[in-house]
Every structure is written in C-alpha cells, then in structure tokens.
Image 1 (tube, rainbow, N blue to C red):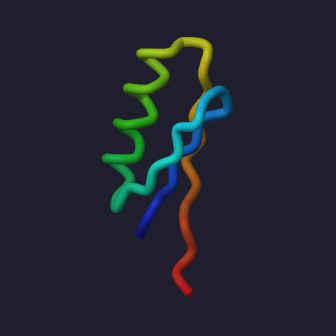
Image 2: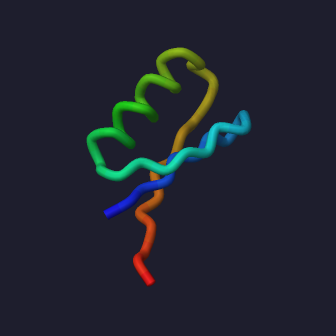
Length: 46
C-alpha cells in the first residue's frame, strides 16, 4: 500500500511506501512547524 502526505500550509507533498513512514514524516513535519496540518491519504492501486 502507498500513502501520500500533504501539508495544508506549505508545498510538502510526498509519497511513502508504508504507513509507519508516512506517519513518521507527518509527525516530524508537524513537530517542526506547529501551525501546519499534514494529512495522510491512502493511494488506490489501479
């Protein structure tokens, strides 16, 4: 499964191959930028 993380306040948009990586990257970004909100989207396979 793949996931995309996307920030509402900057141009952060990244694909991750698994949930732990996506969650870690989102958490780290929000810790570094407390006023940003990162969402994690599950990407559908075609």
